[in-house]
Length: 88
Image (cartoon, rainbow, N blue to C red; front, side):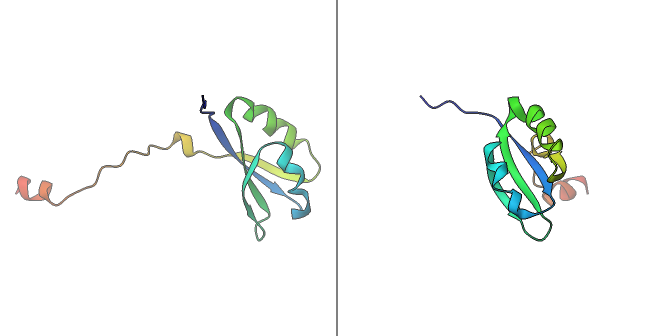
């Protein structure tokens, strides 16, 4: 049976885009920005800290940042004008 694996997004800024192929061995490349020279990489949540530490040690990597999407609340409540009419 299929088991859901939690993933974490990493933003990896690199000096040149020719190095993005090397990043494939660390996880799944989801997006590449040629203008800003960064790669959005998905890795397993359990190994995210190890991968971040390993990538920061590479010469071709400027910096690595974790995505904060998991920390955001994705449940939104729509505001309606009914509340204003009730209070008047």
